[in-house]
Amino acid sequence: MSIHITDHALLLYLELIEGIEIERMRGELEERFNRLQVAAHAMGGGDYTIRHKGHQLIVRAGKVTTVLPPLGGPARFDALKPQNG
Image (tube, rainbow, N blue to C red):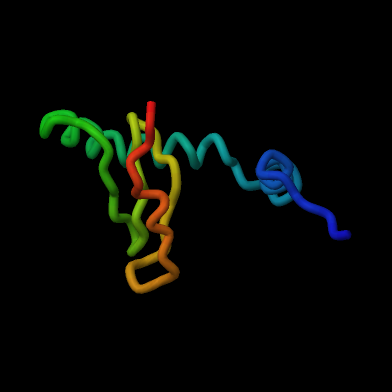
């Protein structure tokens, strides 16, 4: 049996032990992508993807929900499936 590190514990480890300022990073990303959100709403809103440094960020209901590897990398098409609700 091996230990599992939760996302919560990983974020705290990165912030408290490694000194990475997670909330500052979140704010910088939100600021960077906010203008894309405005443009998406101007075109009718909905779900969309943002390409950033070769990766695709999936946006649903105004929230980045996942990040996909660069095109040609391992496929994660389940992230693109319509969600109920």
